[in-house]
Amino acid sequence: MPTVEVNSGTVNYLVTGSGPGLVLVHGTGATGEANWAPLIEAVSDRFTVVAPDLSGSGTTVDDGGPIHVHDLVSQVLGAAEHAGLERFHPVGHSLGAVVALAAAGTRPERVLSLVAHAGWARTDPWMAFQMDFWIRLMRVDRELLARLLQVTAMSDDTLRARDLADFEQATAGFAALMDGAEAGFVRQARADIHVDITALLPKITAPTLIISSAHDRIVPPHHQRELAESIPGADLVSLPGGHGLPFENPGLFVSTIAERLLADSVTA
Image (cartoon, rainbow, N blue to C red; front, side, top):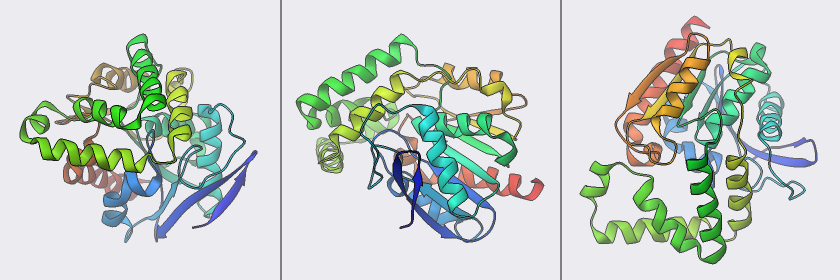
């Protein structure tokens, strides 16, 4: 995978496909490929897809200091430029949604359209308390955090449909994913706690779709309603599912985004 120097770090990113630029921004503890593999497969025949690994994820390397949203915006914009994308469609999930929104408000002239799932404008005490709990659990035992996320990241319907073996298998998978990546997860969770992009939202000029998961316990739907109210002309859609919708129902997640991207790419 190619890399690009951004500020004091080296950003690793995936690039594939051909067509208009599409930049995918992952959530806390994920990587570009892990978060977006189904969407990449679905649209890479129509878009040039760039999926960077943010600071704390994958093989991206930085100085190890605190992570700030504006630094992640620079990484996303730097990867897009390095891949030859002057203008592009950013799509983000969770922390990645925050970064995609901030990028669109920082450099609106580079953004063709925008899709943000499970994003928020400013971290409230509920979210900050929860994310601090993640950090404390990660420091004690990453499996404990994995168990917590199994019962908070999915919707009620999905949880009712799972058996004990499903829970145990998913817990083991998440714990394995975090093996050796604990420090990066903690740094990104701290970045989550300090999010405040409210001043950038009115500066977004691109057509914007805000996607809310109806049963999101991690970033509840009132945050997405606030985003839609703060961004000129933004559309809001609510989908059944939890915060982990990209993994809970990848078919619905991918089809919703792909349909919007194709419509926006025709009018861009």
